[in-house]
Every structure is written in C-alpha cells, then in structure tokens.
Amino acid sequence: MSQLGAVKLQDAATANGNGVIMSLQGFDSVGIQISGTFNATIYLEATMDNVNWIEVAAYDLNSTGQTKAKALTGTGMYHIDGLGACTHFRARVNSYLSGAVTVIANAHTG
Image (cartoon, rainbow, N blue to C red; front, side, top):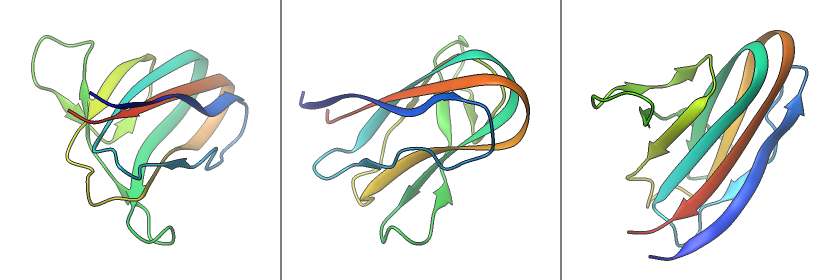
C-alpha cells in the first residue's frame, strides 16, 4: 500500500469555504477524519479537471453497516474508494453556522 500522508483540508474552519485541495495523482482512495465542535455541513468533492467538482459518497466507518453519505454534519472517520480517475479532492464547508471544523485526509492505494 502506498500513502500520501495526512493533509489538513480544513484547519479549524469558522466559515464556508473550499479549504485545501489535495492531489490524488497515483492514488485511488481517501481516508477522512472530521473533528471539532461545529454546526456546518461538509461536502466531500473530487474532480478530474480541477474546475468541475462532484460530490462523492464516503463510507461511514463509525457505523456497523455499509452506510455512505455525501453531506456530513458531524465528527467521525470516513473512507472513499474508486477515485483512480480523479486528480484532486477537497472537503468543502457549507451551511456554516458556528464552531470550528477540522478535516484531515490521507490518500492511498490498495
């Protein structure tokens, strides 16, 4: 397994915003950790052209089932696979009301 290493996509964000864009070159999966105390929605998005961003569903590693979600409103750990054709990934904060949200991601293969 090859890994990029942890990238902080949102660093205690206190407003709506796209955050840091992570390159996926050579990677096909992303692990995500969301932390903080906040009232906001986080959309996980990927792109093939760095212009058109598409929401992608992540497996909720906090649940015992195979639950997937695109709009995340709480803390937890998530995983997305099948991103091999995508070039970049981000975690966009939207509908921000209060608090601070941090999103860390780790791109990997295998």
